[in-house]
Length: 93
Image 1 (cartoon, rainbow, N blue to C red):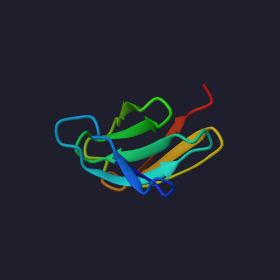
Image 2 (cartoon, rainbow, N blue to C red):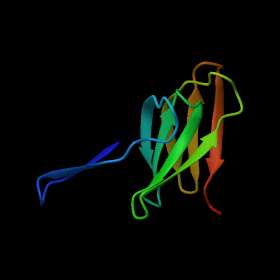
Image 3 (spheres, rainbow, N blue to C red):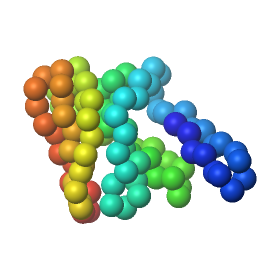
């Protein structure tokens, strides 16, 4: 995952956790946390840019293949296209 700084004309990059990350969808929530779906770990991954830390949320359905992420205040929603389900993570805590 990368971040471009137009003021310094420079990039900063972070390697996603796991042995074989395969990021697909991306969403930034109301707290400026970056969320990615990762086919390689069958998980949603949250990145806190201020701390440069990842947190992995394993999905309960095998091969969920989340191809879309959206949300609203306090929630992140993922469409598990591999199993025809929706998943929600509540972030109010």
